[in-house]
Length: 350
Image (tube, rainbow, N blue to C red):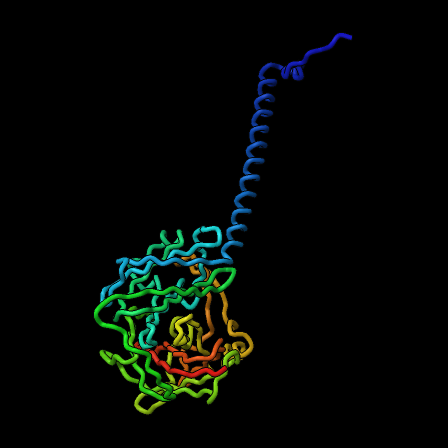
């Protein structure tokens, strides 16, 4: 039997030449589109796999700190640059806005007398493009030489993270020694809001310069034991009159930074208003009573608390002290345009 050889065009031999060329062209185009679609699908699958891999790695957060100048000096403004990376060393940039800020930095001195609470949004130098690379910057002036602990508090879709770093500050003026003060009632100071729930300066518990005065007292158990949930009630007044017109500060009735004299960590938590749904939920779950939504301005998701527009004179704190020792409980709340900084020291038993 004689074999037959067919060319591509021989299939269309009954057709006219123009029709044959048209079919040939269509076949080539369809083939190209097929291979392009296969390539796109494979590339898209790789991209999705990378995204899932990156989300998984974000469950681990590493924070490194660079300072400018490198040697930190008391009384001189310092640039604190935080680099956030995941377990693979990739930048972490998908932070949730929680309590009105994308990243909280709390600064406490080793003598438990100086406190600062700052955020990248507090400064005009905030760089959104840098934040996409996992770089976040704040500015702070350390008032005296000594050691300070810094807590970096952020939230991702996976978890909430608190990382601790230390800064050693040089200078002639030194930090004083720790002073034990277990009073349950005292005069506290307020400082004028710099705008938008912002106060970027260091606050000293003993410095009355340019400060307004209020009265604060706490009700707490006589004996506080490590590992047990503790309920404390804060009561605020001015000139003998209860403050019933306190307002939310950074999306919470009150912020707390709890630090031990060991300087081994900072617990950043929030108060609740008695009688609200938030308080009932917090009694069961310290992280309850919050919701998340996306900001149209920043593109970050926002984590919100439930706080009345006005409240007072009482704010509740519910917390657990992990170990025995002496703890300073720094507070921060707002009245009119004044940011109040109550601070009480407690002793925790085994």
